[in-house]
Length: 133
Image 1: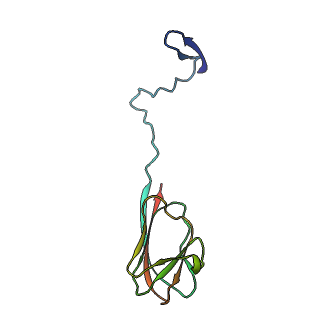
Image 2: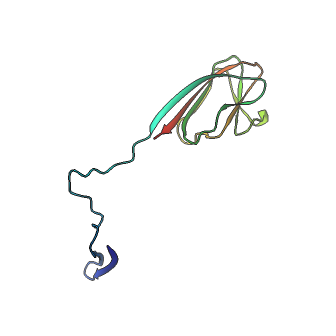
Image 3: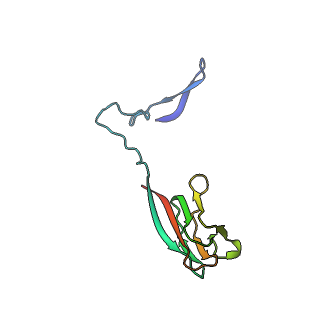
C-alpha cells in the first residue's frame, strides 16, 4: 500500500492507492481467522507472617510487579518500616493494631525494611499482590 494519496478537493480527504499485495489493514471476513488478544494479567496474592528483630532486615523484597501491599501490626509494640532504606531515623511507625494498605495509586515496589520498636519478635503480617501474565 502506498501512502501517496489523491486529494479529493470536494471533501479534502486523502485516499491511499493500493499497488497489490496485502490488504489495507481491514480485518479478515473469514470466520476461521481468529485474532489473538493479549491475555489479562492474573492477580496473585501471597501472605507471610513475620516478626521484628533487633536489626533492620528486608521483610518485603523489591518487586516491580507489585500492585498491592498491606502490612499489619499484630503485636504489642510498634514496628518501624523503612521504604528503600534501613535507617530507623527515616522509618515510618506502624503502631499496635494498625495497618498500612497500599491498594490504589502509589504502591511501593522497592525493598521494605523492618525493625523492632522496642520489643524484639513483634509479629506482623505482610500481604502482597502481583500481576502475572
